[in-house]
Image (tube, rainbow, N blue to C red; front, side, top):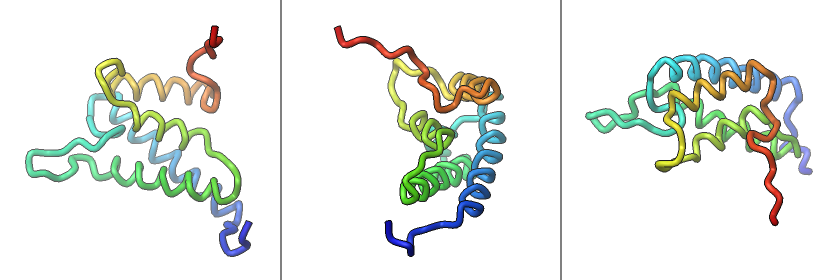
Length: 121
């Protein structure tokens, strides 16, 4: 690893806490019905209707990259970005995703598989 890419672990912990605090606040708001946390909701004026959520997604991508440079992972960040990539008719709405994600965080289940692993046969 290039020493110029090394980040002080304390700085990484601080960024992780900032991300976690902002994520919890946004998840709570989303669980109460606000849309645009997991994907960009566009207002009638063509602007993103929830700029804090957009910044949270940007922070998650940057944080994931910083952890990768340190050859580490942040399960909360990884799972949030996975949820942001879910789209389609078969997936629950944002409100339900936010409630389930909050419950998993409260139970300390982040970083564990959300479904039982299926055998290939």
